[in-house]
Amino acid sequence: KLLGSALFGVGEYRAAEKALEEAIFLKPDYADAHCDLGSALHAVGDDDRAVQEFQKAIDLKPGHVDALYNLGGLNMDACRFVRAAEMYTRVLSIRPNHWRAQLNKAVALLGQGESEEAKKALKEAFKMTQRVEVYDAISHLKTLQKKKPKPSKGKHDAQGEEAFVIVEASKFKRVGSKTTLRQDLANALDIRAFERTTKLGHCDAELLRKEMNETDVPVSYSGTGIPEKSIRKAALEVILRRLLSFLKPDTFQGAVKAMNERILSVLDASGSGRVDLGMFNDPDWGFGILTTLVKLEDSDHVRHGSHTCSVCRYPIIGSRFMETKHSFSLCNRCYSEGKVPSAFKLEEYRFKEYSNESEALVDKCMCFNLNSKKLEADA
Image (cartoon, rainbow, N blue to C red):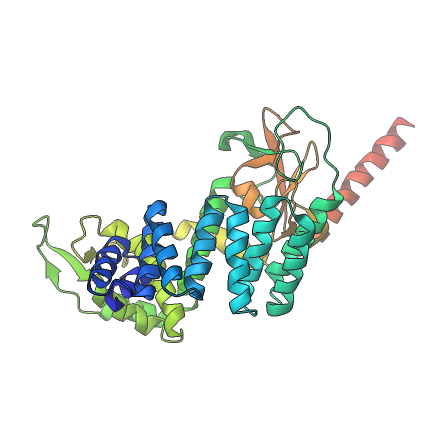
C-alpha cells in the first residue's frame, strides 16, 4: 500500500494501480488502499472503477474524509454538481474547517445555478483561509449577478451570459511591438504554472549550475546502443531534493509528481526508468521565452481598477488586452486561449496591451489631444 501511495504521489499511476490492487488482494478491508486506488484510477481516466473504489472506502469507513473529498472531485469533473455538493457537505460535517471542501462546495452550488448559496459558501471559505483567490471568486460572482443578459440568438452559459468563441491565432493582431504575442503568452503561462507547482523558480541558480556541470553521470548504452548520458529517475529525484531542500516533504512530493507528469514520463516513454540528460544541460534551450516570463512576473499583481475580463468576468490582474475597435478587454488567460465574446465576430481582432492603468490614461489623453487639434483645424 505504501509503495502504491508513493508511486501515485510522484505521478506513476499505472504502477500505483498494480501495487494498490495487490494490497487490496492481501487485505480486502483496507479502506485507505481502496481510496488511493480510486485516485489512481481517476488519474488514468477509469472513472467507473474509481467511483466503486471510493465508495468501497466509504462503506468500510463512513467518515473517510479523503474518499469523500476525492469522490466530490470526481463528480465535479463529470459535472455532477448535486452529487459533488453532497460529498463536500459530508466532508464539512466531519471536518468543519476544511476550506478546500468549502470552496469546492461553492463551485458545485454555482454549477447547479444556486448562486446565493454559492456566495454564502464562498464567504465561509474566505473566513477560513483569507486567500485572495477566494476573494476574487466572490467578486466574480457578484459581477455575474449584476450583469443582465443581453438578448441574442447565440449560445448562452448557465448564468445567461453570452458564450465566448475561440478564434484562430492568425486573427489576433497586435497594436505595437510591446503587445505580447498570443502564443508567447500561452507558453509563458504554461511554464510559470509548471514552475510554481514544482517550485523550481526558487532554486539557487548557482547550485543548479553546479549540479549540471559537476554531477558525475555515467555513459549508458542501453536501449538504442548509442552512448548517452542518462540517469535513473530515482537518482534524479535525489538531485531534485538537494535543489529543493527548502521544501516540506508533502510540497516536494507535489513537485516530483509534476516533474514526472510533464517531463520525465515524456522523456522515458519506453518505461526504462532512465532519462537522457541531454535537454537538461543545454544552456540555449527555450530561453527565448524569458522576456515574456519576466514581463508576466512584473505585472502579476497589477489590478486595473473596475475592469473585468469580457469573457470570464473576473477582475483583470496582470496585463489587460484591449481590442481597439470595440474596446472590450481580456485577461492574460483568455487572451492566450484566443477567447472573445461571441457578440463580437470579426475577421480580425487588434489588441493593445496595458500593464497598468497609467498607460491607458496616457493613450486616452493622446487621443483627446489629437481630436482637439483636429477640431481646431476644422474650425
